[in-house]
Image (cartoon, rainbow, N blue to C red; front, side, top):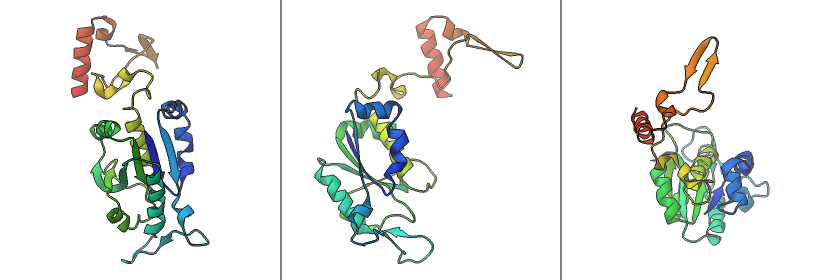
Length: 214
């Protein structure tokens, strides 16, 4: 899987993609992440790519052409990619979407907006899927892009050390415990539920399923 990220701020991804599971997946060549900065495709000598909106109002809008050229370059390095337009008004992203597209695509282009957004004509030129990661507005599309890359990457075989670690594919309780069996804090004792100490796997699984439903 290769993720092609259209962003003005690729450095905002540095710490996340260089550490933990995603960092290991990149080092093991299970996934690739490539960045394309619209400023690199600007004809403006100062590399300005934002202009005031025709509708008036505060803020600036990212011009269409630099983004179009960035996407075109990503297209040249991919095979029939899925193009995702990150927007708070888009369809809600979820695990089912991640599973489906991890199997269907080898290349995903993520368009990260900033300021008041990207000129709408980019969406008319390319067939894009508008996605949101939650019912809220963020400063830019970089955080949603990281969420989507993380969720889709973990569906790819070899990214997780043990594929059975996929919480969504097993009965996993939202409440987990480890040693010590009894934790003392400020004079009070907090114990691990007895069922988890029983060794009775069927009953433990039943307990976990009930916890998931709550």
